[in-house]
Amino acid sequence: MTQENKRLVQNQFGAHAEKYVSSKVHAKGYSLQRLIELIQPESDWRVLDIATGGGHTALAFAQIAEWVTASDLTHRMLIAAGKFCEEQGRRNVSMCQHDAEHLPFADGTFDCVTCRIAPHHFSSVPAFVAEAVRVLKPGGVLGVADNVVSGEPKIAQYVNTFEKLRDPSHQWAYAPADWETFFQSAGLTITAIETFDKEMDFNDWAVRMGITSDDLTRLQALLVQAPENVQEWLSPKTVGSRLVFRLFEGVIIGRKEIS
Image (cartoon, rainbow, N blue to C red; front, side):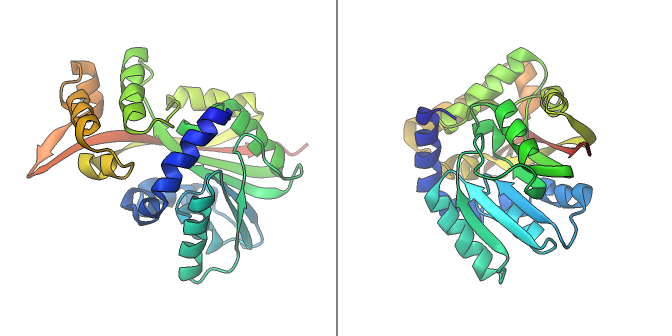
């Protein structure tokens, strides 16, 4: 991750750490449930949760696994996540600050690596996947959930531009086929891949990153005045007094070969 991107991520998420702890999308999103169901963590596992954010994924795995290391680039986010895990009574979670693309762990340290709703902030997703595979034990599992976009380049470009206006630290959300390539290129055997949509409340989504006034108006215009093919993808609509739209999320699970 470049130094400029690191500063953007730390500034954006450091300023809004507590909002991510309380975010329903992050705390109770469908992808968290699916990660647990598809990975099926075991009681003697050591798990690394990369870009832990509010700590929800780390907490979910800590309820099953022996130990979870929750990592994040942003110190204030780690403080918020650590407080959240302690308040939930978990004492088997440790915090570690580092870049997702340069992990400070020895080869083969973990039984499982997870990363949820974060890789679209990374400068190099292939580097992140390669590092995750390096720190996995042979036979270990990598589980990733992240926002995904259409395989149609024009739709993908529009949606990523829309996301980046809301959050300058956003780099790129990829199509599911791209994720398959990342996993296979890193030597993982893909055991599951799923895509699903999630309804977003526009105001909650925007305010979580501190968007106000002119940028809020521009964001709303990008959403409701999008080209027809993008409208079909984002599906904006008014429900009562709320403007809602949809994003798509993908879950992909891969297993490291036993050499």
